[in-house]
Image 1 (cartoon, rainbow, N blue to C red):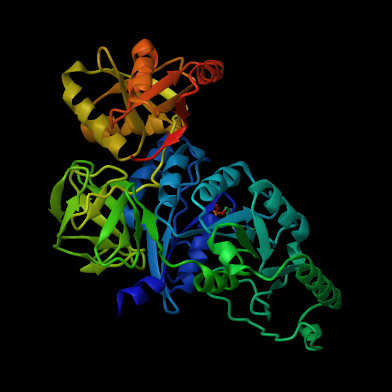
Image 2: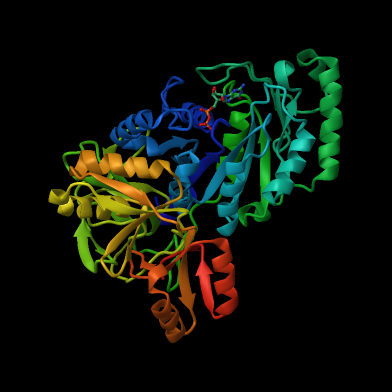
Length: 527
Ligand code: GDP
């Protein structure tokens, strides 16, 4: 198959939601439709919000063993579908944001009872930042949720994106009958089924055909006809280009656990969602069709056995053909590397691949040479953009509890921060190590893994720091002067870029006023 055909059939995306909206359930139904799993219950929810920290460690450990669950690929119709899993817990939002840099589109799941929730809004902000095309699945229509028109208004207002419904629910709660497909103008009445694909499909071509009454209560038929008329009156026909630009979100209604509306979503998704286009690098935009292979690391996962320090680096292929055993340039290290056992994650099963295409994710065994954001090419010294680091909101100093294990501690902290568990900043004099995270839980994970994987013990001393900001200025002297005058509140990130450790919002505001030539950045990207 030519490269362009391989690219055109790929759909690489993430399903995102506020915890409990139904992300795991929807993922599982997709896998059932794709034939990747045979029964429900095969996909483990990786939620941690209801569990104690110790349980969480166990969950993480299990997830470490089944790395395959972070990336799930399967063939559906003529498409190669790849779903990237994202943690729902807020403390791991950063991991989710990075995963979003490796997808071409997202499906956002919203609970019809709760409407738009906090995490939904934050995730949507990240999508807007990158103009990621978004489809929305309003879930749990089998419960008495908000009326569909109200939900559409709420989506538009709180998520700041135009919406266009492509399916319409027939009733809600106990009387929920299924959805009318506004896109294909078909009516599929599903019967609830928890374990397999829905078998009871009634295809009705014309909404005004009398046979509709044979399948639905008269009141529902009337309501559906009225609703559809109203929808078509209010909303313009779907503007596919606006969707691909990230300016308009098609909306689907359904119930993931009952398999209502899921096939409509999946069928429309594969038809409309964008194939890989390319990725901006610092020097230029790299198009997916370019013949030379390029890719970047968006996630690093500890390997199954904590005694072996092996990790798996997840590489998103941006352009060209990736080949097993070929030499590729690791642009940060300036070294050529080759990979004997690259893996894919097809059908929930890890297997070695000989080649891979734009949109694919390959897992590379990593003995410590990779960090998040690293780029591989055939020789061009590229660095991909779009793998943001966010300003940490909790900062603590590392206190070594076992001076005999200083080396292990240093190594552990270096490797785990490269893996993206937390961010490391160093402050002079004294080489103080400051760890920054976006959530409390990450400190627990760090301490646990340092002890169990590196044999090092440490605690984290709270610092009275409000937030960290990366500093940038047009003129290097301006920046140097500022840094020299405030050494006490300056630390350096892993790339030796200066970071301001601000003690309050007030300080930040005052500094912004006094130093208009400086930029205080809440997130940054490779330069
Ligand atoms: P996640 O945290 O977003 O991955 O959510 P899950 O998929 O784990 O779902 C959270 C809870 O909602 C679970 O108890 C599911 O069984 C339930 N759930 C998922 N989809 C539906 C649905 O369509 N209707 C109802 N009533 N419950 C659902």
